[in-house]
Image (cartoon, rainbow over all chains, first blue to last red; front, side):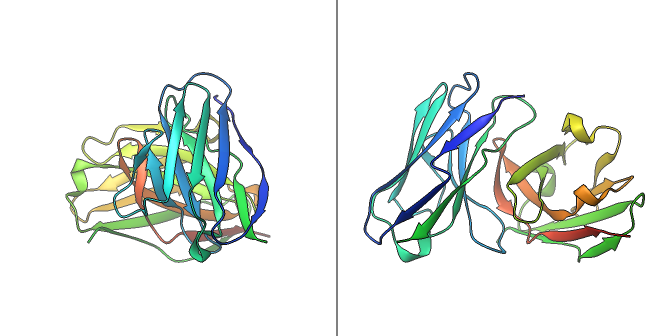
Length: 107
Length: 117
């Protein structure tokens, strides 16, 4: 199975900050990577797929980049509604594993 | 609008089975697959498997092989996930998601399954 790691596991940031989360795959996955946002007690929400394609309706302050084994999710200017946990998921080969998550909290 | 509505919370004893439903609306059911993902309390997301609503093809996570069955009923646009021989570590919120280009673009609200004696 392909393993995903995320860094950091936790980050504390302020409204307006630029935030970057990294996801690394144990082997190359081309651009088969998605990012999700999850708030407590809610289902995950798709933000980005194919590493860099913004899902319809997602604010443009979210962006994704990378290919192969290293990927990043960037929030250009953190908003109050962005405090949540973020997960990456690889879609290169079954099982479609998730990363362990990055919790973004208020500083 | 696309909606996935899941069945309600369940409490089961170890060794029992549970069947969670996921009723889809707002799109052509057979044009997309359905993925199932679970989340144990305070933990991350775990991909369980996928089913094609078009032809019923499935792909299950190896760790669940033999205990999980995913099915669909195209007449009611409903997907089902059955998990057998339940153990305490199966306690989790179970989610269904519409599968678009292998990603979950719309998700159900989640179903809490508690396994306890």
